[in-house]
Image (cartoon, rainbow, N blue to C red):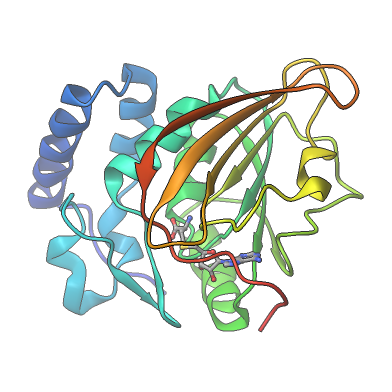
Length: 217
Ligand code: SAH
C-alpha cells in the first residue's frame, strides 16, 4: 500500500514546478492536470524530495527513469487531449504520465516492456485511484485489436517510427507524439494522420529518453 501523504510541502513544491512549466509555455489545462497528480508518490522514498525537480530524470528501477516534468508537460500538450480520447501509451514506466493523461479526461491503454515495472505499476496505479488498461508487451507492435486510437504517445526513444503504430492511429486527425533517434538525444516528432496512408509530420526540439527496445523482458 502506498502511504505518502500529499502534504502542504509537496503541494508547494508542485506549484513551484508548475510556475516553471508555465514560463515554458505549458497551457493551463495541462498545468491543472499536473497539479492534481502527486508526482512524489511515484518515487522511491529515498528520492522523494527530488520529485518536483526539473533537472534530472530519476531512477524508477530496472534501469529506467521517470520523464522530467517538462517532458511530460510538453508531450501531453502536443497530444491536444480532448475528454474521452482513447490513448495508447508506449512505456508505462512508473505510470506518472499515464496518471496525467487520465486527469486530462483520457482513457489510457499502456504497454510496458519490463515485466518487473509492469507488475509494480499494475499494483500502484489503481491504489492511487488511476485506472488504465496496462499490458506487458512489445510497444513496437502496439495493440492492433484495440485500435484505432485518437492519440499515441511514446515515452522512450524510438529508433524509427514504427509502421504498426502509425496504422493504429485514427484517420482524419489522430495524433502521435514520438521521440525519434538512436543517439543520446532524440527529436520530438508530432505526426497527424489524414486519410489512409497520408500523414503530416512536424519535428520539434531535442529530448533525452531511455531507448525503446525490442522484445519484452
Ligand atoms: N512514462 C514513463 C516513462 C518511463 S521511461 C513514466 O512516466 O514513468 C520509458 C519506459 O519505456 C521504460 O519503462 C521502458 O522499460 C519502456 N520501454 C522501452 N522499450 C519499450 C517497448 N518496446 N515497449 C514498451 N515499453 C518500452
